[in-house]
Image 1 (cartoon, rainbow, N blue to C red):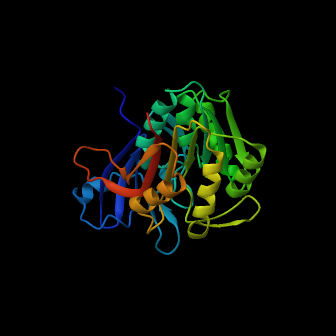
Image 2: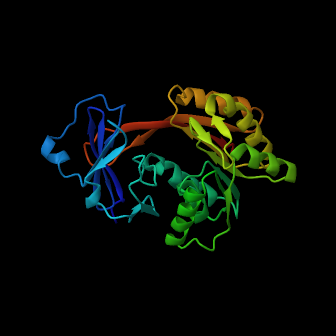
Length: 281
């Protein structure tokens, strides 16, 4: 079996060492308050290092190509070292991609809505499972990046709608149009700006947003997945939100931490939380 294109190699003292494809990178991880398990010589293998001290900076970035590829949980991603330390993929979402791919196979051509969709991992996984997907993000640049990822996965002609818009504004239009979706995915930021400069603060917008999500669910929905990286939004908080907004819809909610994992012996590194509602079988 071909090894996955992502591995957490080690973590500790506020840092994490990761492999993306054939590149090894060191980046901040404030939650890694323990000590690394490997010596400095292990960490010196890194092709580049990112830190936020004295501004966001990559060290050794000249040793990285402008872009490279990695196949992560069956999805090929274009990766690039951005000025924010991101690479174009959040590998803690890997288990969710696998789960969504499989659950979409249980129904012919389900309609899936992916909100705050970033580079499209949670768009392409349902598409691989046979879903028609609506991908929504306020950033045109990230939407173009996601479309390139679709091309690299031979999904350029798949039934995917690519929408650049403020998420709540778009959802309001979809509700007025009478659209419905069998699966809805949302990974809202702590703070963000819409395509026209609209401000999004998760504490203020999460309940109205979930009201819109509920209004867009079909009569026979499959799932709703809510994840985030906002401090204070624990798994139980996310579970409470979904249970409240989906009250009366037959199904159950589970929740947990999203984890970065990889090499044998590497300590799992928490990286955000999730809750997911799954329809009763």
